Amino acid sequence: MHGGFWIRSRVSVRLLASMAFVGIVGLAACAAPAQQPSAAQPAKPAAEPAKPAASAAQPAKPAAQQPAAAAKPQPITLNMGCSTPKGDVLCDAEDKFAELVEKKTGGQVVVKQHYQALGQTNQLTQAVQTGSVEIGDNSNGNLGRFTNAFFVYDLPFLFKTYDNMLKSWDTPLGKQSIERFEKDVGVKMLFPISYGGGRDVQTRSKPLKTPADVKGLKIRVVSTPIDLATFKAWGANPTPVDWAQTYTALQQGVVDGEQIPMTTMVGAKHYEVVKHSLRLDYQAIVQFLFINGKKFESLSPEHQKALLEAAAEAKEWNRKDAADKAQKTVKQLTDLGMTIYTPTPAEYQQWAVIREKVWQEVAEQLKIDLNLAKQIYESQ
Image (tube, rainbow, N blue to C red):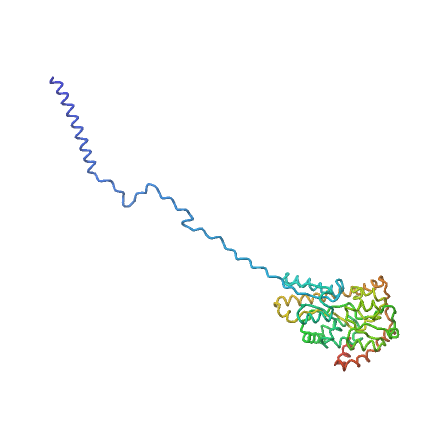
């Protein structure tokens, strides 16, 4: 009994001791303050916050704004009238001018050609004067209705060669005449177009060799005192007819002949109504190409420069082209059934003898400076 008590006593004592130890530890744990994070090294958060989307921190740059493409300006259109059919030496020169203008302006200026559609010669000149057509052409002879600037050039047998006449437009006299024309008509000269030769005389049925052959014949002429005086001096019956009606007048026998350059015979198909041509080259003729003065001034300086440069290049191109065509014309017309006659020096002199007579007759009426005319003739 005593042994069992002892054992129980020892067990109780150990149990009590263990309980006491646990209690002391528990009290110590309760008394110990909670561990504080070091001030020098702050505690890291349990989880780093997610980085905001890049778009939030750095707003996306707006797409680069391209400047709105400027609307391409519409080309400036200049209507141009050619008084002869397409393929004629005159229209070929004007077509070349139009081509060069478009090239030099990069298509910003377009010259639109109209063949025999905007009026004939004087009508076309009036249309350019008023501005209803921008560009037109007319011969120095027909322009006598609008200006006296070219009367000295119309005198018969003034130039010994056609080439001398072409070169004269670049002389002080030529430039002065052109300036007067521009002022009188209200236009800007572009360039004189070469026919490749001066005026000859063609007839429907009677071949000509000397002035005796033309006596009494009705010859279509330009309506100027010089043309009238010239053919009267030869004994012919000069009959003014506008170019547009000349073919029909010849066809119907209203007139017996005409006086046009050889190259025009082919383009205008006058070989169908005249059968003989006398190679006389008695009078200078060019076809001036000009633009309405106000229209020209309204163009930008760059476009004005382009038009004048195109005109200068077209002039040189035309002189070579017209000369080449003139050389081929005789064969063409012969092949088409015409007879072409070149007078002998003695026969030519019979035609040229009227020079002084006609000059004197028209000088006072037209106020032509004959001293100037003689100076031109003698300087060649």
